[in-house]
Every structure is written in structure tokens, then in C-alpha cells.
Picture 1 (cartoon, rainbow, N blue to C red):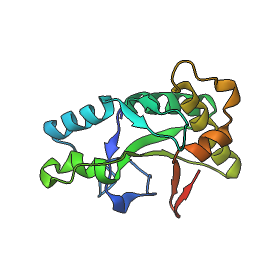
Picture 2: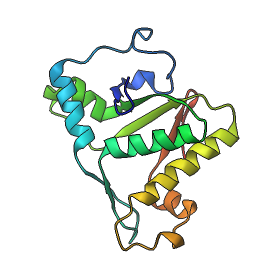
Picture 3: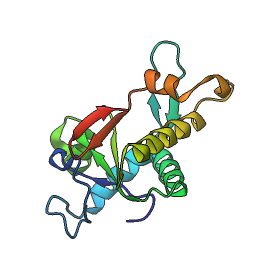
Picture 4: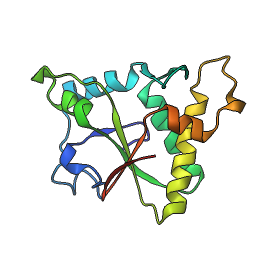
Length: 164
């Protein structure tokens, strides 16, 4: 997969990020219409609302994937692939379901050897989000802890999920 591609995955795959589509029985090749729906979702600007008076971040999912992936690789954490999970993935695979989607679940599949690597991932993601704050926001006063508390981010692992 290219750096900016994201594969929809079924909820049964959550945490199972090994291999490629050729090796994974839960992975299928997308039709042209599904690719177009995926491209629309990745290209539309979405708001990430913060709690209280925390500013809303606005970004294209494609942008955050590129930035996070690039910065993780700078820190020697290789990302095997990025997957879209949940209702947005279902919407891409079966648009006529009528359910639509309310959020985007992005899964960055990487081998983390321990807690130190997970902390690096967490720091990189939060640092990247700082870049998407609106102009005029004093970024020096916003710490990673402030971002963590004010934005909903979660960690999905082979064992399950937890909040960053």
C-alpha cells in the first residue's frame, strides 16, 4: 500500500494488524465505487471537537495519516499499514446500508516492543494534533496532557482497546 492509502477493515480484525491483504482472509480488494467512497471520506475536512472551550481541530483524515506516519518513521517506528475501522469502514464497503457513519476509527499497525514505544507513539500523535490547531491559538500553553484530556483518542491493541 502507498503511504496515503488506508484499507477498510471489519470490526473482527481490530487489533489483528499482521500481514497484508494477500495473507489476510478478512481483507478484500475494493471495487472502484468503494475506492471513490474511501477517497471522499479521506478528503473531506472533519472537525475534532474538544471538551469545553477547547478549540475544534479541522483536518482531512488523509493529512493526519500522512503526518503521523511520517513522524513515527522518523522515530524508527515502522507503520505496516493504516486501517479504517468501524462504521466508516462499513459505510465504504456497504454504502446502501443507510446507516452512514459518525466517527472515524484509524488504526496504525506497528510493532511496539514495549511501553516506551507506545509512549513515543502517543507523544507523536499528540504533537501532530498540535499542528492542526487553528491559527491564533497559543500552542506553547497546550501540553500533551491537555490534548489527551480534551480530545477523545483511543488505543487498540491485540488485547483490546484503551484510551491514550
